[in-house]
Amino acid sequence: MSLLETLRARGKSIKADRLARERGVKDLDIILVHFGTLPKSKDWLLEKEKEIREKLDEKRIVLMGEDIEPIRGTVHEDGKITEETIEKILETRDLTINEVILVPEEGAWYIYYTQRCWRDLILGIGIINARDPKLTRRDCGRIILSSRAIYRLLKFLVEGKIEKIYFPEWQRIAHLVEMLRRQTKGELPQGANLGRYSLIIVHKYKDSDVQIKGRWMRVLTGFGFTEIWDFDKFAAEQKIFDSLKSNGDFQFESDLSFAQIIDRLISERAQREETRHQRKVERNECVHQFENIPCQGCSVQCLFQKCQKCTKYRMVKPTLQTLPCNRIFLSANWRADEKSLREFPGKF
Image: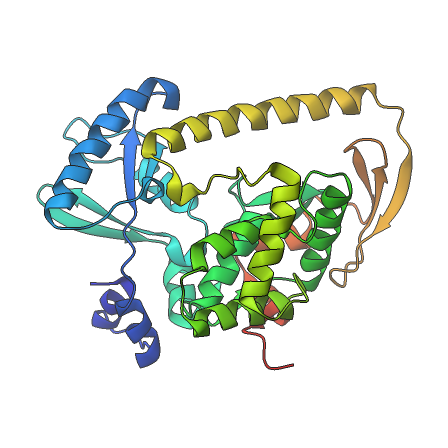
């Protein structure tokens, strides 16, 4: 039984079309809770993954490496998962509608979910969890969606799992400016306006039906990520640009084993730490050259000064503990900015 059907059984009013879509979802994601650091827990995780895979094989359920996620947590002496670990899992989901888990306890299954999960699931709203470092970055202190986050939003919109996404226009522009900067520096292939996720779209949906391919192109053109309307032409362009940049050696998540995914997670975490350290060193050694950066994202009209040589920035006005835009994201309070909810792009 899906969460929507559970909510309906408890008296919530659920639209029939939303229930129908949820019944069509056949996705299975498994979380393995480990107790030590990821490198120390690797062998144990691989052993558990093997046991799960063998049981699912008997039921003819195919499990990809990316379908299992390791989470560090704790359990009580009786084997029950702690509330702190459950909260940690819910707080690290990519979208609010995914803040729901099933937990086995004493021979029964218990469902845990957040209030904003059932709110957005019922209404069909897609908003990113802003606390995940894989999904966001900071620009002058403002929370900006990563390419992965935007891809996830668009994927749910294309597949009809949500009706609207929370994606402010100033964020879309800030993202495209960053993509242009990285393409100009040669860090990304030309035209990869969703980073490497432009190529992931091509890879994952190459065998989809015409309708889904058409919906992808409606979304990508509607939000300004490409000017190409034909999926096959878009795919050919991305493959050519990628081969020129990286010799076509990009490895997709769905092609990776669970062991490779663990190794990638360990590497990514170490890389993030090194990047943070390097940026701190650069800021401390930099002879700053500040330039005014106005933000027109909301009525507050914030003004920043940003160094053109490093990542140092300072806020000129107003003086705030937390930016209004960040408060909206961190609390997932899209009702405070409903004008930034976007539907599936119409015909042009």
